[in-house]
Length: 275
Image (cartoon, rainbow, N blue to C red; front, side, top):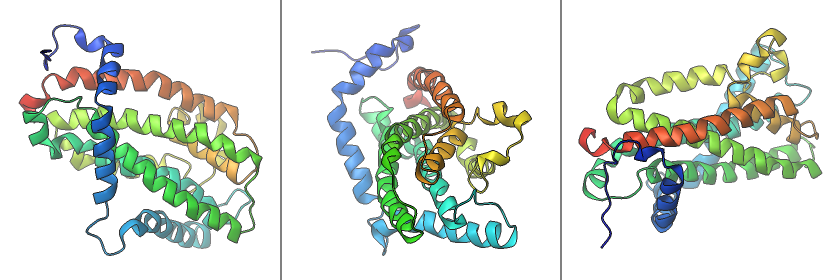
């Protein structure tokens, strides 16, 4: 019978290919827990899955009333309600998944201390559940585009790699924060403020074009900026995404995700002791 060493020795946490192979062995658990996460997400609420739509819609109404009507924020040539919702949809996916995944290890401490499985499965399931909500919200986005007579064009297929990039960046942040949360519970307390601050540091309520050129390179180190800008390019401007913001987002994600995963696997060695 195979023996699994939960606390890896020395630099074993650096063996990325072994971790991925082990994760593949537990794919059935990943699928089962993800399906469970989706099924119970709104099970005890009166409106059920409607909340996946209502959350970005309510934010859209608030943003339109405050930033378009009162503050006269530009909508980049499109109706501000549609302009806001197009950004709020990927933003809600990111913020909701990260917020839930950050507490995933702490809230499942009994599983972690009693049963072995690759711990990254827990934050991954919350990202999968967030992707499910995103898919439901996208249907509403298509309906809004029809309402405002903004057609879907052939460029819409470019959303597939953009959404994949969004999911990978969300996973990277979730892995780091969930691992840190095990040792420092302050992360969960501070996270709502950090997420709120990041929203204003991303082109959610304003177009990317208003960011001064002198700030642009630093600003684009936040992959959400390039992802949201690309969403609007494809859906609202009927054009391929601006390659510069999207390239920034792809490079940062490609660098951070493997490091985030290795950081998580290193922290995994002592999770059962600390949690």
